[in-house]
Image (cartoon, rainbow, N blue to C red; front, top):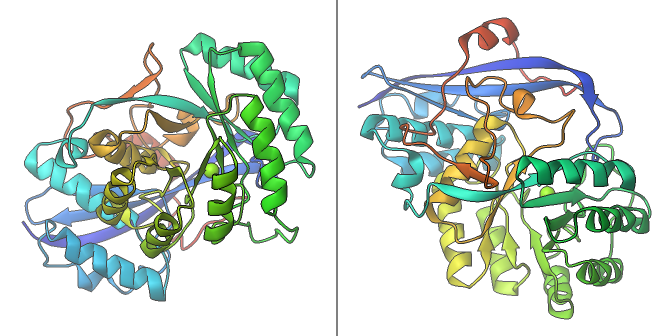
Length: 377
Ligand SMILES: [Mg+2]
């Protein structure tokens, strides 16, 4: 089988009502998805998504005529393009989808086949009052969720801690609770300083008292020694790595003992091909591997396949904060919208590849012709 062409198309839906992402000062009124199609001489097409494919233009010839199964070679080239021009890891996901379709196997089985299911945690994205967050947490319990993640972003973290207290009061021990401090990286407009080790320590001690499972990104993503020092001082698990750009970062975090929970996202860093090696490394060290999955429905599925394939971590991120962040929005290009089952698990099917089918009507309706790079607003 040989690759004959690579196509990149972009789609965007309006968000009404808008989604108030905690990390954005302006509400998001649109949501875009970029799809990478890898066509072959056998008529099979692999599809990937989850990032913009910035930097790919002009490099298609490096893949045309190649065997899609030469995945280590392809990942090396995507890594080289990433270094010089920008991230193109959805191409790696499309190649895994293709390998699955050719062999008739779901990707998670090609990656180890540890399980077809994993417990979801509802990963919220909006800053809301303690009362509203507690109500939404009660709704999660009714829907079958076993865990949820609360995002911090107030100027004073004591306000965020009040939200965790309200949720704990409302749901007791019916939900495991994670907290995302979101101090790891900045958006283009962010100029405020992030937490230091002392601030992170104070918050971590409070969250320990509330029985929180992990504290995510309490410090900048490059502060390997700060995270290691914090981790030594507190009982709560420290999580991070969702936006680290280089696989070497994970080797260094591992070497420094920075984290208990490693969260590289296959759509944003390293693809499935490189991140599976990081997963092996951290798990052999006794740590948890559970990827970030907040991109779109296909990026989410790719991370889920890798987790089901090899992860021993009991949780997986399910981006979900209704009414404004829902499977209908997240998975808008897909026919089937992914939801948990009654036990709070995400279950993969035996469909080959990444196991999704595109919705032709939605693609037709929402394609942006001649798109180059779309904004979020
Ligand atoms: Mg996060």
